[in-house]
Image (cartoon, rainbow, N blue to C red; front, side):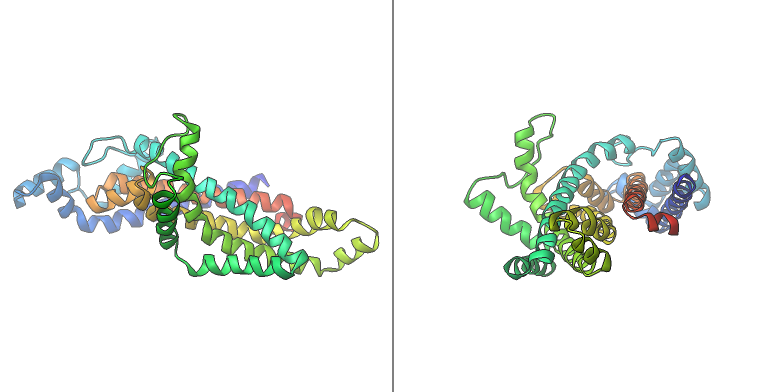
Length: 314
């Protein structure tokens, strides 16, 4: 297991280097535009070249990347070109906002999906139709449309929750819950759709297996068979879907944060991309890759704990 973790970590680091290298190569085509934006409207070719020299953008591309990588390994992601704010601290502060929304949405998604998926597989009938209806709605209706509808109904008409803004958890826990409720609901809909369908299908497959019939003939209660055996067997594929949903929610947070004016990771990345703030874009790329690698590693470890066969195949 330790060797497997080390292999995954090395593969993740290699992936991070490749992604950041490709990102930097793509950004190199906009060096002149970035320098012009920093200089301002009165930029002349000489001023642009002087600005590029000051930022070190006139050096060979590979030399620039190695310089950035050597600093990144030491935890130094540089300063924003436009605000001179340290990129690492800026990303860390905004990442907390995004993760509070994404992790809350992920938790609610797991609870709702497990309950609906298990009930749909074991009871069928009306519960199954409800579960499939929820899945269909989540697949067909975009998160942005759901967000707008929730703002109109819950914030504008009923005044139950604020339409925009964010309050940190440390400042006011109750207010924090109210400010993330609508974004969380909007973000989790597609996740509930995918995960419910996956759990339902996996549970139906598990309940048809021979070992379930054997447990029933031995007089094991149905509740114990479902929760202790079948659900554990169905958890592996569901965890894979859950890891993909986490990545998708991080991407969806970009839109949700814009709609609700949340000072999170997605909004920060969006604004940096518009400005062409290269240190921020590189830092965000690195954080994003490492976050995805970490989540996938945790999912694989949990899946190996749930399913010994997965450990052997790894």
